[in-house]
Amino acid sequence: PGRPDLVREMRQRAGSVSAAHATVNRSKRCISLDLKVPDSLQLVDQLLESHDILLEQFRPGVMQRLGLGYEQLQVEHPKLIYCSLTGYGQTGPY
Figure (cartoon, rainbow, N blue to C red):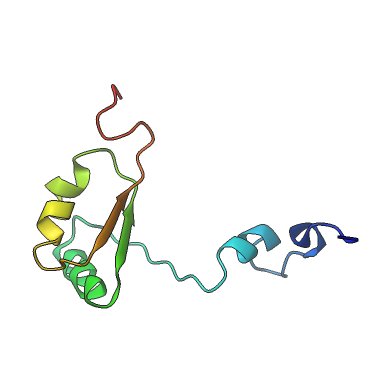
């Protein structure tokens, strides 16, 4: 439409993240948790009280072993939208 792609026009912010990262992650917040620590599991439960969606990318079965599988969480959070993003699916050979 008469101008280059918006991401190409954006400059990197000094001392911060790239323009592309800033564009696709605008208004997002991230946290990192060690899910093997009981306090982290309590924090996940607290977060699910005020959030609707959980995205995870562990190997199949890991979230269940941590007590965070869909079947386990939906008991306390029946409206939860649970998305597993595995590289080879839930039942693949890897």
